[in-house]
Image (cartoon, rainbow, N blue to C red; front, top):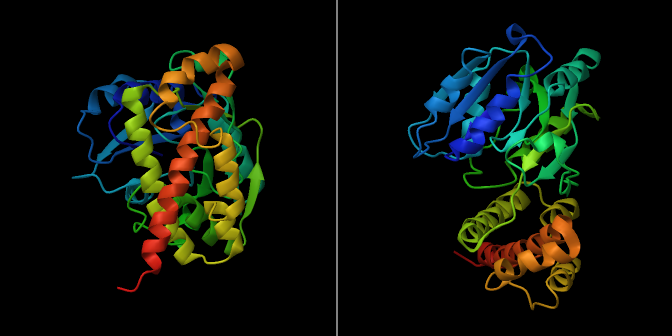
Length: 298
């Protein structure tokens, strides 16, 4: 199941990867939920419709990833729902690996490795930038859950209207139901994360601000030190962010200008860490602001 919002050229690659799975086409369906895109996504869905069973569900306007995924769960006919994002590319054995997890364990949450790639075309034969180290119980960039368990947990909380944390929230509820995370190395996926330009950096910064807003909701729902660690609301994370940005010397105003130089000197992984540090510090500043505002008397 794939929530999608614009970026149809990326969605096209995602869908093409799903046409080469080792499972027979009759064994799976692909549900694409168009979350109020301004772009017409139907042509890229139609491109693969002759090869695999794919459905396009349109929401009347942008409701957020939680609502889009809930709509996908509602209409899905399969026993097991595999979640990926529209910028995630999967090799041929991906769906079979997730299916095998659930064939062996009826109370599993399937997870697999998520590798970051900057290559839109032919991502599997080129070295990934690095591995996404997410420790989340449920990470919807690469995860699978039986539909009955998703419904029993109440689905995604649509109060997470903006980017971030809705999958961690659902993961906590699934874990409380007694489900067990099962990791399959064969269920590898590649997350398309190109290094930003000055133009695309604006969107990335806005996404970090949304992530900060939703982090406050997540912390309110699940108070405690574990959640504070997850959202990085600790002095240690502030110090690490300061160090990763060279004592604050790097920021949104100059990071795009130095990415190419860092890439030449340290390779794509070094450039990615540089950008991630700047974005994360921006997120932490926004988080402090949102958290302080949430504590103020109304």
